[in-house]
Image 1 (cartoon, rainbow, N blue to C red):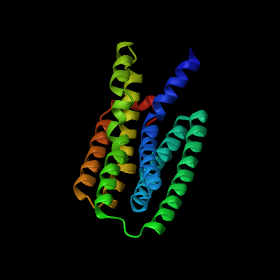
Image 2: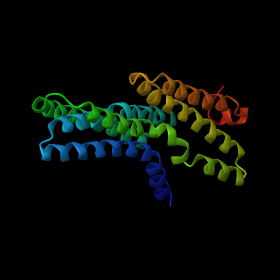
Image 3: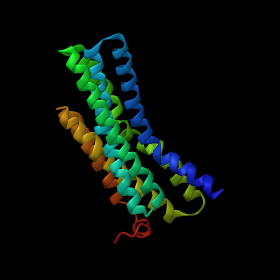
Image 4: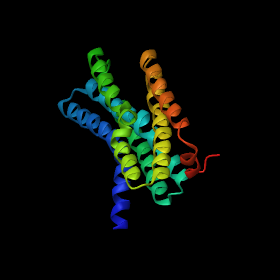
Length: 214
């Protein structure tokens, strides 16, 4: 039973990263299809998208997860996420090389292709932060602990989750929108991070104590 619970927890923890990898997989599939058709400009753009989905989405998420595993003292999660981060780097480099090879055969990449790729990335890059609370089922998990009479555990879980949700906005969304030159959406992500940190600050002292906060 304990082993099953650990596997379920690991799958839950990994789901945001797998979602960002899905962005890479979708872009890669489009790129490979374009290559087979001989549409090298489009292929180059989609290979670039595959790389950026990893570099701007999955890689910073992996770095956060490594940090969190260290904070939690979870050696199994630390080893898993370290390997995952290494794989992010390898796959991104491969995608960049494929993009260069296609671009060398293509010439100019049409602007309408660039626009389509950018819209694709806008959705995939930021979804981890936007959906972290939902994917983690934190609302129901906090309520479950409270229903079991574990108020301290519920507070500690909520405090940790809100801090980590804020960190995702700061590490993934804000830098991405700033690189895109989208001041409005970068600011919105900063406000969302600030809101979660503010809620975390309001956590009662007994919840802080459970996490070792002074």
